[in-house]
Length: 523
Ligand SMILES: Nc1nc2c(c(=O)[nH]1)N[C@H]1C(S)=C(S)[C@@H](COP(=O)(O)O)O[C@H]1N2
Ligand SMILES: [Mo]
Image 1 (tube, helix red, strand yellow):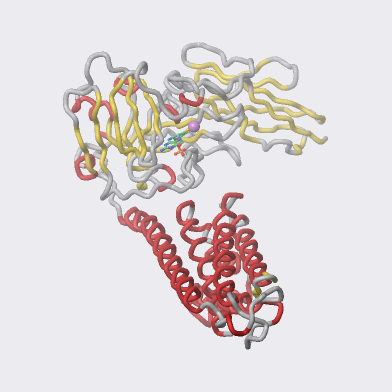
Image 2 (tube, rainbow, N blue to C red; image 1 turned 45 degrees about the vertical axis):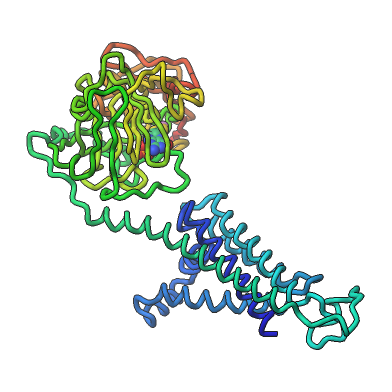
């Protein structure tokens, strides 16, 4: 009886610790245990939450975790007592727990289908453990033995003389193994979780290098955004900034451990650490970043004030050799980008950045160090968590996305976007302020035009330009008649090139075409 209960508790322990360790390799919050706890917190009716927080003070989360552990241990005991070699009810109990954990993880705010894996794989491990343990308890037992129910060995040919009860040795070995699995998996989970926690802690205490006044970003002029509610802000908040990368789990690297090796076709190899990098004179520059996967009208674009160090100066220290034309940069998780050396050395504000809008880089935006290169899509230039620079040649090296069919050089295409009113908004007839953004990094925006239905193109009002490398806001006063109307926008870049109407997909070098929105206007 006790051995069976213990089997169940061990099996649940195996399931939880495996789930936790697997989750830590993806996202700590996908741990079935933590996801269930978080869901309980979120779903508890407000009064219950307040009462428990009142009663338990700041201990409410540990209390919840302990309570959850007790409940799970009880489920484990039940699973152990119910399990029979030929009637796996206990296994079913563990499977159901796994499904509950998976559902809790998948429905977390930032969860998704992959978050079900830790709970499901953990439950699978738990079921295997339970089957083995209970199997050992019933091994060689005869119907005449005491304790185990008859269905355990109905087909046993054993006679009382050749049965010696449960296989104690096997059970003890299995139980010991289960404890070892729990310890190892639990330790892995804790270690991975702690590394992420280390980075979070370091970041919250990190001091960004000071930016001297002469290196500050030029001031943002008044009126940089149109005066209307709901317009896109000029600077994108760190939390609002789009995020694109291939990392399942945000790489966790501390500034303390960070190194950048500069090698390849250079006169001198260099290795930089955080102190070496930040001892240099820092700059702040405002740059609009864009993703090649941005669809016409999409939001994979954002503008931030980046604190960092000119990439050109760092490259000059290493001394690129004649013939080199590419910087192959690699992140700590092995992702690569190949950037034309020319774009890094032609005087534009290409930075090795450590700060974003006055904060250390957020973890998901490349903490502690990333690249920002105006005018090039992120996939060829904006390596986050960057740790390696190889100076090389385009005819010798290729990078992550170019290996997958995307263009080699990745210059950003001219684009414009209607941001307000919202899509399919119901509007009142009369004056409607339409507003949006346009960008053509390195070339700048000199004109934006709007067309209502099949009417003529009319000039929108341009807000002040900040620089060639930032988006430019515009607005358009529309005297709207009742009915269904479609508005198109197009822009002209600083070279005089009008944005093309031709629709092209994002692959291989960025979408093209005019953005439009349709509105219903009521009289
Ligand atoms: N290490 C790493 N850096 C990366 C990527 C990546 O997958 N891994 N994606 C790139 C792409 S495609 C873009 S568009 C930008 C996006 O930067 P953000 O997530 O800070 O907006 O990061 C670039 N840097
Ligand atoms: Mo991208």
